[in-house]
Image 1 (cartoon, rainbow, N blue to C red):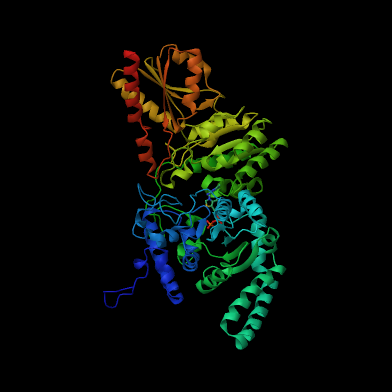
Image 2: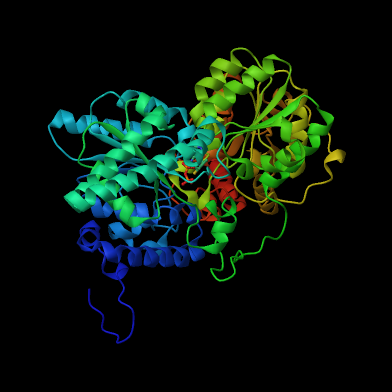
Length: 638
Ligand SMILES: Cc1ncc(C[n+]2csc(CCOP(=O)(O)OP(=O)(O)O)c2C)c(N)n1
């Protein structure tokens, strides 16, 4: 490392181009590197926004892994990947890091095509253990000898998938390591038995007493045999002591357990990894970390700082003050909270996302009717099914992208039994900077295919209130969706909004040349497009197609009695969406009507501001109007 400026501290980080440079550092240099990494993360993320809290918690772990193992030959898999910012900095992406979450820039999650050190793409929780076991198995099939290490948070240990992986890997004799990053938090405080278990391990006085005894014995041994023996004995004792602790859960699953270890103590981390790394067979290292470590604002409010928008690093204040109408999330949270007073049988379910879904608002007012099931979407849905059989009305609030996890549960446990469960899908549609793993583009297609499912999407906040009223009056599965955005306008008082008539569309503007059917977020742009077209002499009808299934057959028949062109617009995949369903329907009943479907092309959508993503898919008033013009020219010449 060279330094040309007299008096300036030598930057270690600036010289690190990859893992080999971390490995070259002496142990005593590592704390300085950790500080530089923290400073860099706090600085860059203050501009881009992102998962700062989670990433600050694993800075030492990242350094220790890179110091003690040999990435990419040794394969380190990060569960979710939101906490892997330090990993990105130290695996050759320091210079590019300011482009985090921007167009063409570094992804906020892991991506195999971004770096050879991102071993497995992620974004959804619970996949690391299974993927790591796949890699360990492949290694053995190929006769190779690298290490495979899955880093999984205590939150992700509420995912059933993590246990499916452990069950398969434990007792397999394959060389595989699991590092449990235990910070007591999911996005909000972690829930359930696993959270209690880890709390028990940390608080267990037997663990502490034993550790003290170990210390005394190893120091005595050190006097006689020297330091090497001390390290060895200490680590052996670590695992012996777990015969008496809750680490037994992992032992029973076939993993040798080591821990708990202070995940911010670089010496201890490196020692432990150096000791456990060369062993064989399934083993788990349990480390204790603090979310937001080293950044006072993030340490003080760990839930808020899990991930957030750009901030001022000196004050912790958001760079952009919230103004204008509330978010859809807020409207949903307020509405559900209010409706619970009218419906004593209503309960709310979230899968580890109370603040993300707005159910935290509900939880404050109705704590006994609120259920956070952990990162367990499938379980959450079937749990709702069980509740519904007993006359309770569950409202399941899960992001569109995460509800994908529960598709079988939706069909098998809810639809087949026609249970009245309401699904509220936040982050439906394009999700901006969160990127491809989090896109909410598939729910229309997957929900339309569920027998008996009512599928809806509100155009504005009042309609969300109205649809929730309709949902609670309906006897059967019902879903609605809204985006990662602000509502278009401020809502009316909830009490003044009535239910939407079941199965009805809303004619926003009559017209006879073309009918533009906008779904949810696309209803108002459809109206604006129709108005633009009217100014050009094209008589366009605009329809708020708020019920995707069942459709408003009466209004549809009326529209196609004079319009030869129908244009559908939805913020979802064009494959098997509302437009596809309508086209099939009209092909049978009105083959003379041409249907043009607008939506998201059949491709992965990269991170970008949501507005840009909408525009690039033509999902704006201008884009819709342009498509109608070209559609009409085909109809009139055809
Ligand atoms: C299937 C799924 N559901 C929900 C989420 C949203 N989510 C992102 S990170 C996170 C918490 C993860 O907690 P943990 O694994 O302990 O990691 P930490 O953030 O505490 O480091 C959640 C719920 C997700 N990524 N995937």
